[in-house]
Image (cartoon, rainbow, N blue to C red):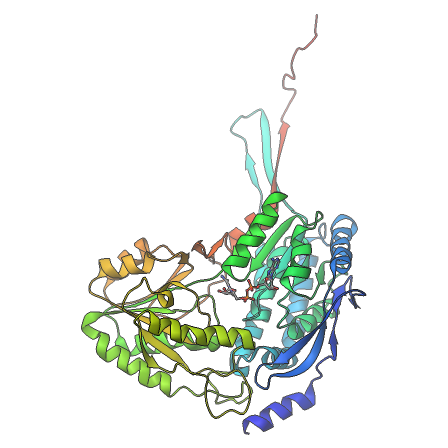
Length: 505
Ligand code: NAD
């Protein structure tokens, strides 16, 4: 099947809604005062739908619904077994509709359908995993002072504002939502204004699976309109945000004014270090995957590739050769490896880094242009540059596209120094078969996750998040419990203990 057939076959089976509303208290809701915003297919640049932006009044209605569900609904006090059953039912319904969700996400993000199929499964697994987590939560008891029993229970915190980006909406927004609601909280989700299609359907399907109204509300719209109202709302108790570092700073400032806790999953410029002691064939595969997967639009991309001098010339040449052969094309075509970037301004920003690289003395070794051979669509060639130093902008700034920056190092000390010379600290990749090298890198690189001899591999039980400007807090089994619940300490005497003598004669 060629790409036109594959696209047409998917389009024949599933509808794209003409207008995308918000979803409040279990119902679609069209904001009376909001703007209409075009929703674009990046492979064609055609408008495929219209998003109805939630104005402040609509955000207020969504927060009211979440508050009502938290204060008076069944969800926060529900037996864990029942809440777990609903989370499993959500997993099952989402899986049963995976092809439709995959279609809606592919047509709106430009990510390849093969890639999105993995994201859809990740979304389902997120619900499954947190259903399992809540059934393991236990309290603490203390009896050191034998006259007293002190116990600690955990309670849901309240209403969360959950804000998600456009680069992997189903995988990332589902993580934001489930970490919040699994522990008994309720929330308002605001996805990116660029990618509302799969998000609306995901929330609708969650309700078909039996989620009570008000537990998850959805508001659509831009950050500056819908997002700021949501974060600043006095009835919101906490904020979970996945997105860019500058936005994260603005959100943390706004939340800080009302002492709202935040969890922030932000940007990265992660080092991918290739030592001469590595299995170089695997390292090459991993380096290409690390930067070009997800059309290069991923927070955990290995976007700074550090290569040891003794192997650099050959490794970089082989990388460039492979990059030139990557198949760019329609995201529905099963042979496509890189689809279009998500929206025009983003594509232009990514391409602008080619001139920035040259101005800083870097050499373009692959790509560097808008891809030719397409009448339309936001296609960019897989690009790689060799930078003269880690101080260059292409080594320091997150580009968030199919754009690799190579740097050369002489020894392990220098590699670790370069890896740490960044305002980010999300992940690092280390390729070496020498145990001492691996252990030193694991200990000394300041990043939230170190992947050794493998491209990205996500263990949901372990904490995920960033050092430095890559974030605050972590997603994961224990960390999500800590963030999304309040611990409560209760102390009860075991007998008649003295209670004081004030005023006794
Ligand atoms: P973005 O920061 O522009 O937008 C993210 C979300 O925030 C969107 O929904 C947007 O509408 C909203 N927003 C913008 N301004 C806001 C404001 N003032 N108040 C409230 N909401 C606001 O990010 P993006 O371009 O959508 O996503 C790309 C970025 O996300 C990259 O930097 C990437 O590294 C990062 N990211 C991080 C992770 C992670 O887990 N660390 C995962 C994916 C993406």
